[in-house]
Image (cartoon, rainbow, N blue to C red; front, side):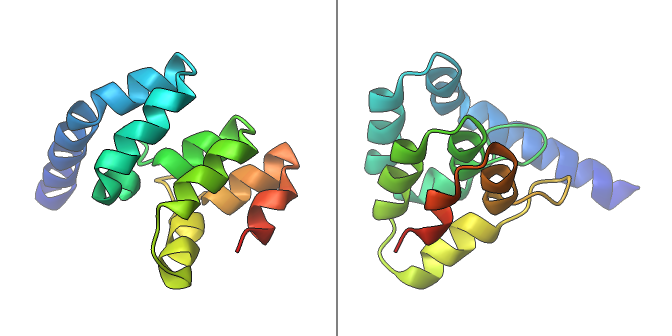
Length: 111
């Protein structure tokens, strides 16, 4: 139980830190969202939600293929792109799952 509480506290801190990116995503400010991550590429893998959804989960889940591609283009190599599309949230869903649910399969073909 102690470790679980520690993870929840860490996650809440991370989510709070990502508040600006989350707000842009909710408001569909995709230009601002992309610019946020262009300035801080390391934040691409940070949790936007308490369920550990990152920028890729969010963009894929709302069927924004252009945004998913733009975010993937910020990553320097194929292995990081693979990680971006296969990192699970707390429910075990990856951005690829989101792609499958939304039928936006072109994302999975991005190179």
